[in-house]
Image 1 (tube, rainbow, N blue to C red):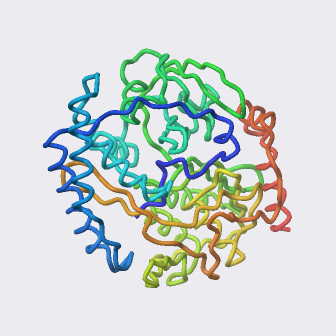
Image 2 (image 1 turned 180 degrees about the horizontal axis):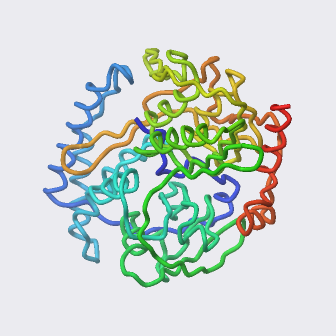
Length: 419
């Protein structure tokens, strides 16, 4: 299961209202091929509904006859009147995308084969690019920055989570598919020129490319034996990296720990559970999920190794999903002080379902709750110590990490705890 790192997640709602929606060139439906495709897709959807009935309950029936008849009429009108040529594969994918978009859920999505491969690659591998995760915002169809890998080219160029890419190499991203945007960014070894929208301003930035090795955990020992671990996302090997970091810091005599989850938009549930398991006693509840039919599933600690030092967790408005699971669990048990800003508030879980032809479907299937039964969806987690970072603070921290005022305050809290 996945806590979703590929959609806009309703970020920057005020920004979304400001951006002017651009109309997109409409493409027609296909001919007989697409009608057959829709029949198979609808059949697959109905089968899938039955398959997931234990999660989602009885699915409402679709009027497949009406869908096929209307699509047939659209196809005939298109063949007769539509002026331009069109790409059949793009049009077919557009039908599937539109079906899922009709759920009116910003976290559910249909992935083409290319998009699914990209997602899997970024979850576990190495790729050539600028070090960002992007998604299509459903409200305006622009490409949004969902994750920026620290230390990679985009991060060094000042790209931030929540930025919108209006243009890539002069091409309007609102008229491009996500695959086309990613291909344009990765395409050659030349720098990519991005036009960025941020908080009412537009600017251009040229970003170099490099081989991106996905390392989601970095750590160091700070003064007074205070350990510091930064987690950028939850992917397949994040739990192993996190546990190795704790083990190494413990071997150095760590007396307190800072876990930095700022701008961490989440990721895989299993990685999150394994990471929390290294901190809390075996069999203690980490999180539980609840499906539409009321069925509950508990996720408990699976490790006998317990961390016995005071902790501070750093959060901001982009701390979301799996990051909130870790934060909420340790806050419920009184094992960590949360410092920073209120978290994003994403308390639902998505499952990614391969469709058998290389494509995949991501659906919201359950809600999650902290050990005390708290839902943080659309609410977020309030910090114990509220402390904001301005753009100037972030700029200073990027230039000199020792001047990060939230980290400095966390160190002070941990030193006081030790005394």
